[in-house]
Image 1: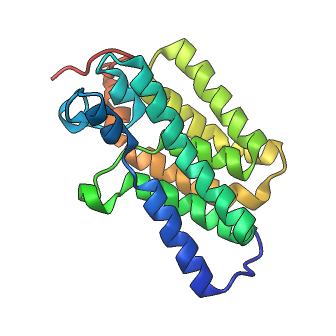
Image 2: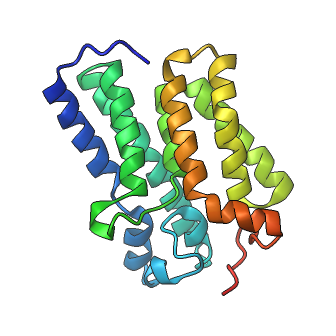
Length: 204
């Protein structure tokens, strides 16, 4: 963890900013704008890029992926430039929580993978890029998005150690735990062999 040097009031403001930015449901916004329907009634009902892909619109899925990753990264960069490293980590963490638990969706948000990776890239780009590469390699092998997310999250702490970024290790571990909690149903389906592959419509 970085040394906390920012005033509590400013940290609260930064935290609120990060949460509000992270809670923008880009998947829902994009699919509605393109007339693809309510994303929450499609496939798994999740608001992330993997479920947007189930609409058959690859461009919408890519835009959702980039924007969901971008909101975590932007929160970190704004806080770092305006305040400092302690605020940057707080902003990134709160953006991640905003994506997972957006107030205007009844605190039922996405699973946070893109926002997790975007936040890591902004906080410590070697760690973030290594985590992205881990996701890509796992996806190429398994063709299962959730499995790729879980492996990438599990390895994120290892990459912090490899690249000597112990300052982001605690936050990375906390976010990793939240990724696993949000993916618990997926983990059960992976074990049962019923988890859909990337681009495949979820049964039921």
